[in-house]
Length: 316
Image (cartoon, rainbow, N blue to C red; front, side):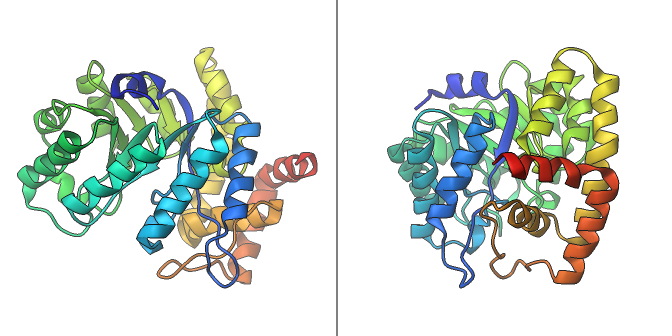
């Protein structure tokens, strides 16, 4: 388990926010989760986030959330760092879950403000302050789509964001706002205090890397890590034109169609095609229909991404 400062330094490169595989009856597929964890590690992923938004944490029971996190920690067995998803609807509930994650051996936790209700910046600050006071573990602040509107005071006033990063143990920010100006300014303002990771695709990282973002969270890594690793390698070697061409050819068509059909459901459909443990979505999320799967497949075939996936599948 890392110290908070060690976690801040470790957040580099490709981070995968994992899906949670379910069986056809919507029960938790822990064997599939172990296989999926192995697949990601064997394909070069060293930073994993289980039980986050991509992992449908909101449809898991308390016990299932702990099972998912513990399974990924035990399967990774030190070969990858595990940042456990620990958002909750109340501060005491969140703090208890964070404590459980720490005892299970998580290297850090990803925490949103309470995703149903909180009272302005004071409520946000008190939430993270209490979680930090009660748990010695690195905290990855997550501005998720569910809280973007209510986080407007922080997004529009970076001095408030800086106050969050004065809280001990708060060492990183996951930005899912798709607000390029906020992403840039957060990178510049927090560069000495925390790692700012964009979660808007590889294309988002092209922008963020110019301002000091050390890593990215993008959906393609869930099923085809090689393309993200290649992209990061090109970026790290200053070959931005080639990295941009890769994004333009493969990622932008993928993002466009998944925006229409359902992003997380599309990821699981692709995993199913590859023989990876994807499975259905739990309500209130909706599993892709056959018609939607055909549309997704057509776009991926046209872009050439499907050919790459099939090649990868043959090697699994």
